[in-house]
Image: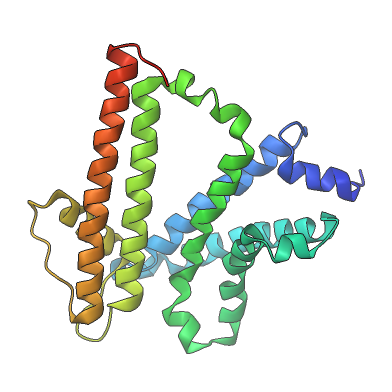
Length: 237
């Protein structure tokens, strides 16, 4: 079955397309699994599984490349795609892997930039806004808000973990992404020991982490207030 440009575009962007749900679910799963692989491959003790990480990476890149090519081909004005925010994100999601074949040392040290794939999920969530309207009713007020808060805190921890891995790791200290995420969580809690990373950059990241912790605490207060209003008082906005 040969798809026209219009039908191909609908597969990615139209929730009413028969293949929309399947294609976007596959891409979402590939995005999440590839991000998990990128995070875990920074842990020295897991280097023995590098062949698995490599397989996951190239499988994901093959899917993302096919998506990029099909989106580029099916868009009426192609510059509207490849110059758009999501077009740039899609390109960055695959480009470091291909350039890594050239063994560029700067790409090997900063290959974790592939973590930007996380932002691909925001487009898929946006495209599924028809279903998102019913998410609160499906999960309940408590479950829906907890899910949103958990997503926010994981995203912030992930970005801070990546920052430590890329900008602070050196000869004297090595930060894996999971290690950086746990450190950020310790800073958020305040009571757990969390040393200030070395150097000026480490200090800046520490201050930023403190600020993020306060912002997340404010978000938690707002979430609890919303749950109290809707669940206990029955007030809906």
